[in-house]
Amino acid sequence: RLGTASLASTNGKLVDVERLNIKKYAGKTALGMILTDYLLYVEHNIRKALELCSEGTKQSNFKSWWWKARLGKCYFKLGLYRDAEKQLKSSIKTQPVISTYLELCNVYLRLDLPNTALDILNEASEKFTLEPRILIGIGRIHDMLNDPTQAVTLYKRVLVIDASNIEATACLGAHYFYSDQPELSIRYYRRLIQMGVTTPELWNNLGLCCFYASQYDMALSCFERALSMSNDDIMADIWYNIGHIGISLGDLGLAYQAFKVAISIDPNHGEALNNIAVLEMRRQKLEVARACL
Image 1 (tube, rainbow, N blue to C red):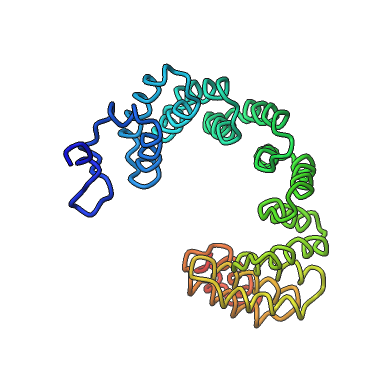
Image 2 (image 1 turned 90 degrees about the vertical axis):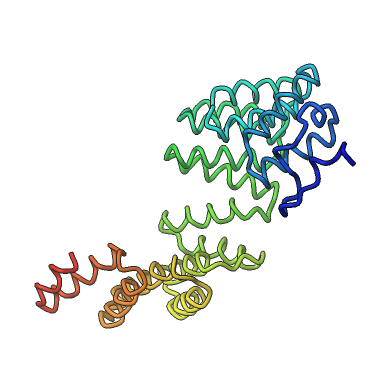
C-alpha cells in the first residue's frame, strides 16, 4: 500500500526513515509516539525525531506533556541544553512526571548547576514521596558535591522503600569500606550477591573488604572468583589488589609476581609499575626501578 510505504524497507531496516511523512504520523498520536521512540532509541536519528516531536507538539496545540518531554530529550542529545530546559519545564508544568524531572536534572548537571538540579529533585520528592529514583538522584548529587553524610542518609531511605535497590546497596557498601568499616561493607556486598549480582568488580570489592576485616581465607577465594569472571579491562586491577594483599601479609614474592602479571595484562598500569619500582629498589636493582618509573 502506498500509504504505508515509508514503513516498509528493503535495506534490512524496520522503517525507511528518509521517506517518513512527518505531518501524517505526527497526527496519529499513538503511532507517532512509537515512531519517535524508535527513532530515538533504535535508529538514533535525533534530527528526524526532533522534526516529528516538533510537528506533534504543534498538532497537539502545545498541550501534550509527552511531545514536550521527547522534544526536550532530542534537544538534550543534540547538546542544546537551554532549549531542552525550556521544553522539559513546560512538560512538567503540563503534567509532572518522574522521568521528566530526572531528565531536567541531567540538563542542569550538564550545565554545571548541581544546586539547581538538587532544587528540581527536592521539588519532585515532595510530589512523589516514595519514588526511589528521585532519592537516588539526590544522593548522587550529594556524592558529587563531596557530602557523603547526606548521601548515605538518602541511600538508607531508598532501602527502606525498596530493599532490593542495587545502586543504593552498592553505594552504602563502598561508603562503609572507605569509612574503615569493612565489616559493615561486607553485609551490603553479600546482599548484592544474594540478589544475583555477580560481577568481577563486586567480587573484587568483597575480597578487599574481607581482607581488611581480617578474613584472609575468604579474601583470596573472592579474588579467585573475580579473576575467573573478569576480562582484560579489569583483570589488571584485580592482580594489582592481590599484590597489595601480598605486601600487607609480608609476602613480597607474591606481591612482585602479582604486579608483574598486572603489567603483562596492561603495560600502562601506572600503579603496578610504581610498586614494582619500589620492590626493585628494595632488591638494590636501581636501574630496573628507574626504568619502571
